[in-house]
Length: 135
Ligand code: HEM
Ligand code: HEM
Image (cartoon, rainbow, N blue to C red; front, side, top):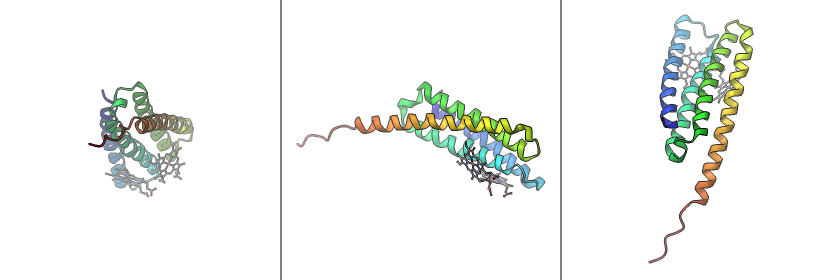
């Protein structure tokens, strides 16, 4: 599967879960897990979809193993982080390592994305075609 397709499909599944979580918070009038809901949606929907758009615009990355590792690690890190933060904010303080572990995974994943992006942007700049010769 292309990195962008994986990103788009995972992002839309995550936002369905994130919106359901938001509705559950609103209906129960218990907003204590809101930081987890916020990060699940912003990392799992907005950021992941943005990665997908970038990969879709840069076809050379679509089948690059590093892009797949980046998307999967972001996905796993986001879910682990959201579960950990959600548990901590609802009273299970022992879930702190999950929140921390997930956070470091998404941070590492963002460093990988930064590497891919810088490499792609610099290659694009040097590969720009020379100006067409005058007629
Ligand atoms: C059915 C859809 C959604 C519902 C019912 C919902 C509900 C909620 C509720 C009840 C809160 C807690 C508010 C508070 O106590 O301050 C909240 C916070 C938040 N939600 Fe949602 N949400 C939904 C979708 C989304 C989506 C799609 C995003 C992001 C793209 C998002 C981002 C956030 C953020 C960033 C916060 C934290 C805001 C703050 O710190 O004040 N939500 N949401
Ligand atoms: C390693 C990654 C990240 C870590 C460890 C982290 C950690 C935190 C912490 C500790 C807070 C304060 C929560 C509170 O006081 O309740 C926070 C708030 C917030 N973060 Fe992050 N964050 C990360 C990434 C991001 C990213 C990538 C975004 C946006 C795309 C984001 C958006 C927000 C927003 C909107 C808030 C305020 C909403 C709230 O009260 O929960 N964060 N973050």
